[in-house]
Length: 220
Image 1 (cartoon, helix red, strand yellow):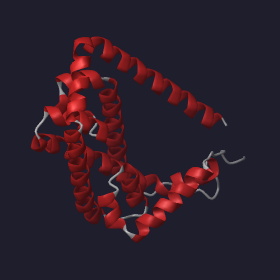
Image 2 (cartoon, rainbow, N blue to C red):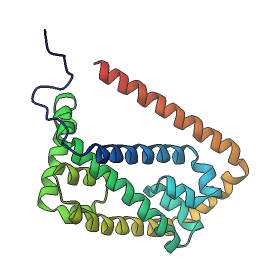
Image 3 (cartoon, rainbow, N blue to C red):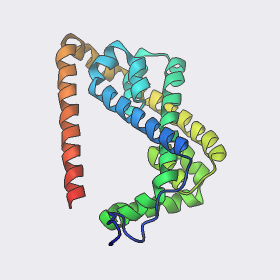
């Protein structure tokens, strides 16, 4: 009887072992944060004007921090944005640890250009891991840290320093752009319902296009 077929290439490594509870927790955290981020982006006009703290709680990316800066004091903003970003980095670190090798093998087959970029980033991270977490505090860096098996006790403190630096830099940019963003908010406020509906429609269209691309890529 022939063995069941598999989409995974023979040389592609399997995901690293982790206790089922840990694996489920990492995937659930990543999924919850992704859903929250999509929802926050879809409701961007409403949350920016009416509930800037909720905007940061759903997605504390640079754009949202800049938009929320004129409406919040820096301490309150940091108390929400830094933990939210740290949760995202922890989830990405966990996914990188679980699936980093398998993802690299898949990208080498399907996305050779992306694979070369990942190799370049890995070499940079291998030489300067702590500096990378502080000076390049992105999800990609956290995923690389997980994929390389960095001890989480070393990852967490440097990741937190990097997120503090990131939020501080975004607050400074937000303060510099406060006059412009305040005028934009004042212009959108009378049309808040229409702007929110347009944002929801754009988010739905984006998700539809992304879903179709994923199906096309999987079929190919």
